[in-house]
Image 1 (cartoon, rainbow, N blue to C red):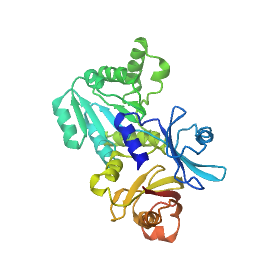
Image 2: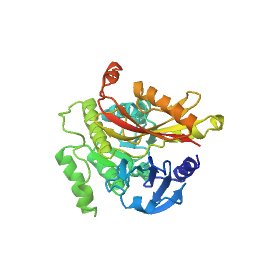
Image 3: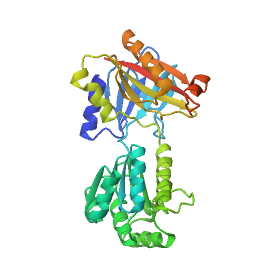
Image 4: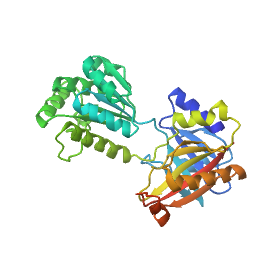
Length: 343
């Protein structure tokens, strides 16, 4: 629990992203943890462990993953903020994007300078809206490495205003709608204003995967498919959500034994990605999900056993067999799941 309190403090201070969490999952040092920031250990629950040897094998691709060293299995986890979407423009395409973001559990902010269109975005389910000129609105939005920016305004003048403000913000993705002619005008105009062509070439434009989309809804599907593609190429980031941490540390459950469950490796198709977490309480309450069905039910029993015995367990779940088929699961992969009692 001390580790989770430290993590919660980091998240609340806004300094959790780009930290790395290392957890030893097998061997004599099971449950030893460390937080690494810029190559330095900033927290550990075990000063005796040789953390420097682990720092040397941290994956360069920044994907959370299970590695082996000296016969131990070690989980290296990259912290990221929760993904979010910022949409510039609240027209028909944006309305479909909002609905898809809701389905994908992606918080979405919509910007437009027309109150009628902003109200449409609110009614469609936008989490946040800003009714101001684009430049002013974007001054108040800080991007980070987990922010997807979508530019779908009503004209290339507004596209250029938005891209000029966004291009120097940290981001996971910038996409801009428009024909080759319209896009060319925007990019050339910004290059003339001093923005480097290298930066401009990183913008996804024309926006969306090429699926022959024609209607606003189809274009929104193409855009969100591209965002999913970009996001999933960086899968395996840590998912210590606010909901998870708040639920575990709530005063009302302080005295109830708990276990933390994390997917640490995945082969083939699986319902959730590496890094997905849930908490299991001894009273049967679960916070979060690792995919539901027979997998979750089985892991729940492992969690109860882990709490009773006071030991962590690394278990493998095979979803390729008949049991998974009978559950109606479309997945056919194998996952490793780490279950640790929270003390």
